[in-house]
Length: 471
Image (tube, rainbow, N blue to C red):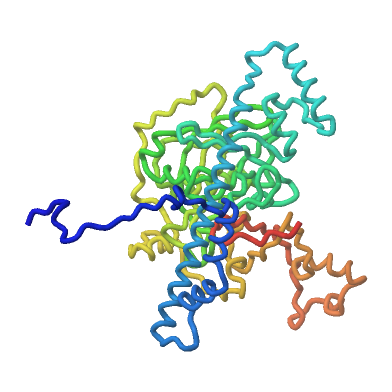
């Protein structure tokens, strides 16, 4: 049915009055309106209603209590998750920014393009800015500002193809000081890549093995890029590592990439030892190199000779088994040797040797099982500390591993490890047993020669950070 304005039975009757107001006048101001809004929305009655509707009450049924509890827990977890993401992202971006600024600052100075008088003038300016800092003799000008911030600065580690660039630090008084501290000595979950405290980075006096530790944080702020060396293409992309110390620029050719263990349990009571800074003999050095080649996932074709020095890049890799360690080894360029590497000769090593835990996890047979007969031993209460790797060469027995200690490990002064003559002197004379002449009942006692102190390697697990002491 079509309707129009005249379809209604009776039109509205409107009476116009001359005394009616022409417009409505609002008496409330803006601030009063806001105040009324909050009073009505956040009144005690509304708060009580909100609590009753969202939190379990005594008179609620069991089903309703469960529903409200699940909802409340989910909301709390959501808030905590969002807060963590914001905190993580903020710290990540801040760290990226700091590294970028330092990289720009350091790479902007090239002493090869400056005259001697310019370098001298710049050094004068630096010493005026930092009068309380004693700079090492012969240090490169580019590191002046960085060294003024932290005198533990040892240089820069970089792999340009991997976009890996880090200041590396060296603290001689602690083996793991920068595991959870940044360049400024403040607590940071990323820590900062650091050199083994036993190493030397003096000009012309590099250690036989320079060891650098770094977290595997699965982002740009750690040694996560080393994971790419587990693939052949990743190695071919960047076969050379650059380490600029305070005094010189050095380049190193990668010769091996291994996946190894940090606990005795992971390889049936055995542990491959490679964290040795200065080897006791050429034979020990070459034996270690042979063991590295045997475990390398990549056949690089890069040889290592007796007189070579090596670089060890160390990080965690626990994606396959607990306590896994990914280690990249490189050797220093020889005098007159080109930094170019013929990567066409490289191949994947399908017969690389891995810890027993690797084969167990993947359900494979260990072809090297005959080389590691199982050792049985009791695990200490704090097995995460007692079973850590050592840097002492060829240590297989877990009882030789000391507990974790901060700072430099103390020398072994236990009486039972001292020679018998030393025990005699410390006791003020020989024991009655020693004064008796040797016989069948009292055979001569051979003096016990003390073993070298065993130093545990740093543990770079990123799962749980230590508590931060209050300021």
